[in-house]
Length: 240
Image (cartoon, rainbow, N blue to C red; front, side, top):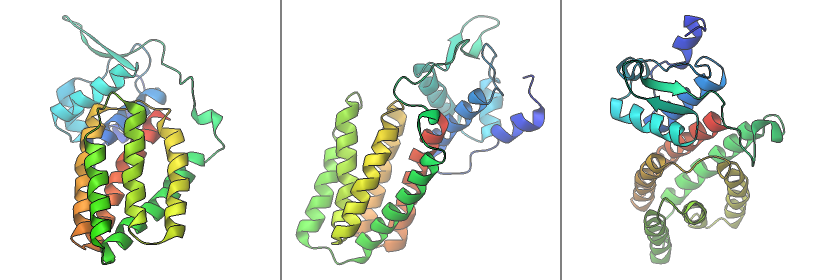
């Protein structure tokens, strides 16, 4: 790569969160958008890149496949093959960072973290009624059962689960605030691809969050929600 090694090392540093797939996607897209991996240029070899990022080669392949499906890289076979950044990077016809006021993305993510992390903690700290527990469990089953090819339906059911968590806090004001921020989050999510690997990971995290709430473990519920939201934030920062 023609870019200074220090910049390359900074972007391709080890992934440190539990959202390995999402953060790997974010790092790769960031490198492409900043020109560290320029159009037409070959990405580092898979083994080298996985070692730099500190992720498994399976995770790296899933991330590369995701950004390939989104039109950022392409694979070439043969002696001089590998993964190359496409010559003309895709634009987003619905929304780009320039369409939004400066700082909107981080504003939304910060507010979402405060509200939804707190909602998960409050829900776990409360003595839930049988109806509350049924409502939460039903929302979890509902989102896990939707096909990943139906983006609109997945977003709707995912939203319902997050709203259900707010609802069982028994705070109408908090539920309203979560609904408002979720509307803004969905507007951002609609501008990025729905990735099967992320959906699978999100469903695992949903189960962890709900299990912590149902068992009354408030610190674990807050931590699980924070990790879940950070995975989404990584994808949004990467694509937008």
